[in-house]
Length: 294
Image (cartoon, rainbow, N blue to C red):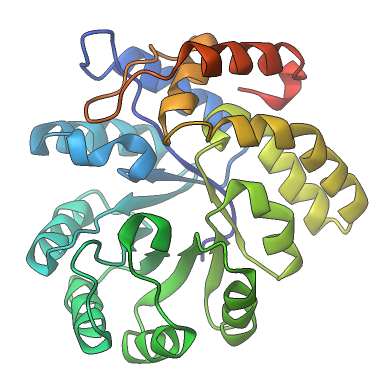
């Protein structure tokens, strides 16, 4: 259901902090031109926690009108409140997405029974679910045995976006869920490893800037040209690393501003990146092949 390169879309902003819809429209067009297979709206990279309810509705309306029928659409609806997650999912359903991305509840650190009940209630809305497992942000690392039970008891789960760096656990999941759901890479810097583990694709923040490269890496791998795929990845690896020199999406929005897609503005509590990191990004982007970037 969810195969290929999905861009976790950033929210371009004016210097005032307002959403820059002109830049957003250009960003959407550039992503489609790059050949991405899907777009994730209202994810972490979109700075969703800082968007008002009205902004979220307007952004979804704007983006889905331009994407529907062209690529798969996933909408982020997770929360550490089950009631809120269900309501967000109901609201997302009005825009007819292909699925919703639901992060494991953060801060609360739910026990297994609570985690399963949380996803069962979200599933009652009637949309395919991609579970977002990112222990570095949520503080919750779900054991494979619990995840297996979750997938068994919530059949609406169609995918897992995996952002764990414990590769032993990742391999356990890849083996366990093969042919059962779409296992998606959530770590841009580990994309080749995930492809080698039969991952269905990637949900990528760096693809905001480097979508053409990510699409080519994926396509080459699927064509059996694994050496060429890794060679391209190796070339853009320094660019991927610098995307995360500071908290996502601060560096990515700085890169987007250099490419003409809005300003570097992020909303508090995120702040402007350091002059040192700007210099590093400027220097490395000057060495990049323009064909790799939107």
